[in-house]
Structure formats: C-alpha cells, structure tokens
Length: 580
Image (cartoon, rainbow, N blue to C red; front, side, top):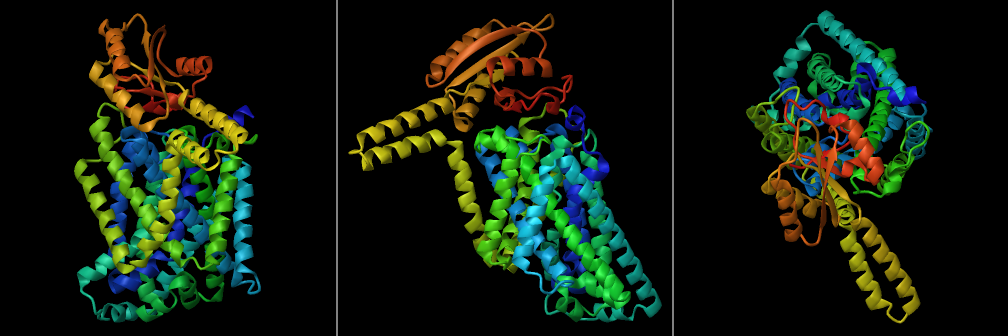
C-alpha cells in the first residue's frame, strides 16, 4: 500500500490522460475550421497553435511556482481571493461536466454505427458508469487505460495522414487547386477570425494537466504541455490540408460530424473508415476519463479549502475520492437526461467555460507576477506574451458569441446557479443565520422544535467560526500583518488566528512584532489573535507536527511569498497557502 501511495505518474501516463482530451478534438476541429475559414482553415489552426505555444509558458510559470492541484483555481486562490478563485473553479467544473457528457454521447453515437439498435442514452449512461468504476480503482489503474487509448489514437491519426497523403500524391493536387479557387462571400480577415474562433475548441483539455499536477512526478508537468502542443500543431493543420486535398469543401461541410471517417473511406477504403470510427469511440471515452480525473483533483482541493462539504474528502483504499466521483457521475447523468441527448446546448457551455478558464489562468499569471514576485519559478512568461495570449482568448470568446449568440444565454443558465452555490458555501455562517431568522419568524408557535433547530444552527455556526487559522510570520511589519487580517476577513469564516514565528540560531523574532500583534488584536476585535514563538526550523516536518498537535489542517496555514533562497518548494509544504 505504501508503494502505491508514493507512485507518481511519469511522462507517458500523465500525457495520455490530458492528451486524450485535447487530441480528441482532431476528430472535429478541422471540419469546424474549414466550415468557417474554408481553404484557409490551416492558417487558423496554426494561429491556434501559436496561441497554445504562448500558454505553454504561462502554465509552466504558474504551475511551476505553485505546483498544486486546482489549475486556475489554485493560482487565483494564492494570488487574488477566494471569490475569484471560485469563479475559475465553477467554470472549470462546468467545462468538465460538458466535456464528459458530450464525449460519452458522441462515443456511443460512433459505437451505434456498428450496432444500430444500441440505445444511445442508456449506452451513454453505461459508458459514464464504466469510467466512474474505473476511477474507483485509483489514478494509477485509470492511467493504464488512458495510455492504451492514447497510443491507439496517435497511431490511427498517423495511418490516416499517411494514407491520405499517398492518395493526394497519386491523384495529383487538382482537388487542392479547385478548393483554393472557391470564392467565399466573406473577406479573408473574417474567414480567419471565424475559423480561429471555432478552431480554439481544438485546445480544450490543455488546462486538464494542471488539475492533477500533484499526482505527476517532478518535471513531468511541462512535458505534458509540450506533448499536447506538438499533437495540436502537427495533426490539426495537417488534417485540414489533407481534407482539402481529398475532398471538395462542399463534402467537408456535408460530413463535418464524421469528417475523418469519410476521409478514410475516400482515400483508403472501408477498413480505414472503420478504424477511424473505432478510434473515435475510444479516444472520446478517454476524454471522459480525463474529466473524472481532472474534476477529482479540483474538487478535492476546493473541499480542503472549505468551499464544499468535508465528507467529499473520504477516500477508498486506493486513494480514490468516491463521493466526488459519485456526485460528478450523477451530475453528468442528470444533465444528459435533462437534455434528452440533444447536447448542442452544452456545446456552448463547453466552449465559453474552457476559454474563460484559460483567460483566468492568464490573469492569474499577471497577478502572480505582481503580488508574488519573490516566489521561485522554473520559467517566466513575459508580460507581453501573456497579454497577447489573453487578447487571443478574448478574440476567440468574442468570435464564438458572434457566431453562436444563443450559446451565451445557455452558458449563463448553467453558470449562475453553480457560482451562487459556491458563494453560499463560502459564507455558510451568514446563510445559517438568515435561515434561522426565517424559521423563527415562520414557525414561532412550534417552540420546542424551534429551540432544537436554533441550538443546532448556533452550534454549526460556532463550529465553522471556531476553526483556527495559522499564519507563519517572518517578523513582518504591521502593514504586512494587516494585509493578512484583511485577507482572512474577506475570504475565511473564522474568529481565531494564531500568528507563529519559528526561531532558531539563525533567526530571532524582532521586538516590535509582539507589540504590532497587540495593535492588530485591538483593531480586529471580532478575531481572537494569539501569538506564539516556537524553537525549531520551518519546514514540512514542523508543519506536519504542528498540524497534528493543534488539529489544524495544513491548508488553513498561511505564509508570505518565500524568496529564491528558500530551501523548500511550495508543493513540499503540505498544502500551506500563500496570502501575501
């Protein structure tokens, strides 16, 4: 069991989990781009690849500095505030739900081509159930399935490109010339704009790797980013060019839902069409697996931060958070049944959600540069490149809203309730007090029942607010400590804070610190501030020891940004958070 716990994902399995998601876009993104950009689709797809190249450094800097699960939620939690972090988290969860349901449904549609009598809705639920059960076996076992799917998919795409390439060589470039002579009713700039906006769907899944970075071995995360970028850069433009060499643009539009299978049929025969269809079914299933893995890491991190109920952290013997997996599975089934299998509405949620998440990641990168300058990071994205990447995402968002304005309304229908739930969970004390007031007003005659409910409510509020938090001070001045108090007031439900300094032969707490903390205690009467000096050396062992001794979870312990000479990496500090 101990060996299982310590096992970290190496490059291939880590890349396979997120790679299945992003590479599944090869099945449809070329057709989408050709639909809008026509013969210039390959340029739009190369622009998407360039945007993704910028995000490689953005993600590399952020996750390298804060290598903890949670993606955009994690960076905004450690550089902004909980509300903004929860916004990113809700968008990410919506993206995962949409990805899971759409991918499972599309996979069953491909399977139905081999078994026409297969009930699509029941088959989709069955596929979601299969990956729910697979995830219960643990991430290590899940990654084995992902690797098999990943290798089959890359091999199938390679075979398809080779066969289509041979077809073009043996049949000449007449079809490409004919397609390039087709005139569009739109200008070239509009075609590239629309094609780029639609093609940005081809990088959905790029954000997934950041949500299970803690399960990856050291140095693996940037390799997953590189591998996803290579897949997108090589296959998407190449497939678009080959499609223009094999088929007229009109045929591409007619067969956009199964373009690759039709290309295989035209260039290689029925066997290749079947191979592509089987591969499509498998890799779309792999995207479902990615959703389960990604949402598990994200929701677990949010639960540790008291945004979701603590029972979600319960795990089985293989460290699988089965309550999180079960809730996600039930949510996917509920949305599938509520839409009746007509998932075009979810496509809008999917598109806007993941583009907004990438945009927020770029914002998080800028805030990290501004507020966490001293935090060591393995690579740095220039401010100019971050702003250019944000501009590209903004253009894609605008383009998708212009091309499909109904998507925006559907998106808000799903997003607003989700975000409101998260905001309510962040301020449960206020909710409980309001609920108590309503109950007292409506049911005043039922005195005994009211007394029981009042007692339970007050105990729950006290339990929430009595959760103590810890800030490890390095002798900060009163202005810095005041920032700590402001952050805690705005983001945490607590009335207890313990400020701790760790002294040793190299460091002694300054004399003014005790007086500054007394001043803060008077300035914030609603929070009971205690001050404590400890002899020792600050590090993972001391954090674990104090967490066990004081019964305070490590993610309720805060530090300021460490300097480059600090001997520990952030991920080695047991989940301690940065707040100044």
